[in-house]
Image 1: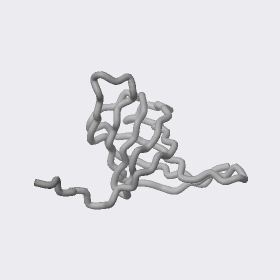
Image 2: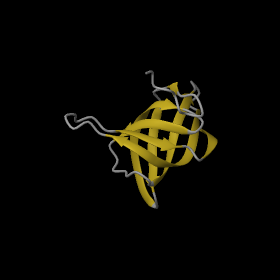
Image 3: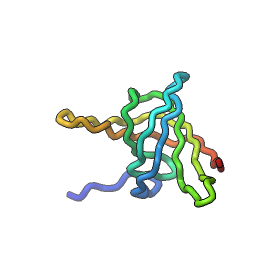
Length: 107
């Protein structure tokens, strides 16, 4: 029997620069990369120590221009799943909700 998609919003396979700013009230500042993204959630990799249920704040860089400006998405969410491979040294895949977000333009 085929697996039925249960997500409410479509996911887009996008590998974008990711920075985990904080977990709960603790500043983290760890870099990573998104694997996919939707309006309600994100799947990313990072070597930061996070836990299921933990609130997080993160920034995804959407576009960099030749003039040095970039568009970023600053988000608040919660970790909902962590996929670790026991035989791998790669960072885990982390799924999180996107509960609030704002677009930022930086130079």
